[in-house]
Amino acid sequence: MTPHFTKAELTCRCGCGMLPEPKFMEKIETLRVLYGKPISVSSAARCPTYNAKVSGTGLTGPHTTGRALDAEVSRGEAHALLRWAMRHGGFTGIGVQQKGAKRFLHFDDLPDATSQPRPTLWSY
Image (cartoon, rainbow, N blue to C red):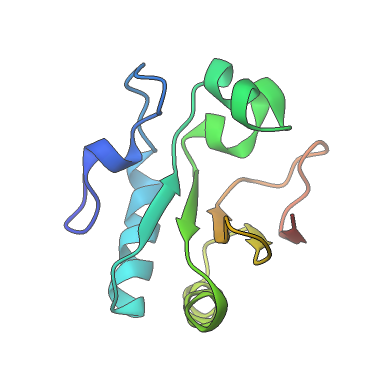
């Protein structure tokens, strides 16, 4: 899909074939280039059915828009990637999960909405 991200790692894990929006992936690709290191994707596009299985956001979470991605990263690397994301701009939603075994940063570029106000930052 981009020079640093394959279709296989970005496709919905249920097998439906849903992919992230190309404009969103341009932002992620730019972030990857600025960061200068590989970014391991734990989740990108999710169809509503799969999202409801794996997320508390149900059928309408950020990943169902094709405009969200979770990057597996922790500790100092999470800090560095977050710094680049904040400098680069374009991300309106950033989630931080830095405790336990599954550590990641969530990035999305959703518009402001009553159900999902933007810009916002949250922790899991």
